[in-house]
Image (cartoon, rainbow, N blue to C red; front, side):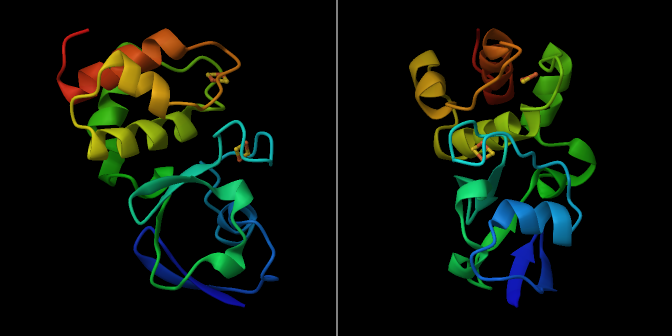
Length: 151
Ligand code: FES
Ligand code: FES
């Protein structure tokens, strides 16, 4: 049993303490925008925010999350997909297959919260999520667009 704050809702979930947070988000809570890629904290497709920090939810045990921790998934990032990163993603037409993209957007949103005007180097250092379709150039362009910096 765990009590979690996900997207501003307090939820009680019946799971073992060592269940990965990603599983709870997808299976118990039904928020499937957060994706399973590698399961070993390498690809970033499972990225969510916990207390405004981007985290890989496949590698976090639900028992290590406090009820006071604020978890935000792609579904809770902004009403009606109105976050500047989401708008830029749409304008630049970043996704190809789309599988990695919710994780990419969560990583970009966390980056801009800390570094509102990132350089290419900042983006490359922060955006370590893997995209098998190779959308990295458009991701960088969209991050600059969301930041209002020239490409
Ligand atoms: S599924 Fe979590 S980092 Fe790949
Ligand atoms: S858009 Fe296909 S894996 Fe990134």
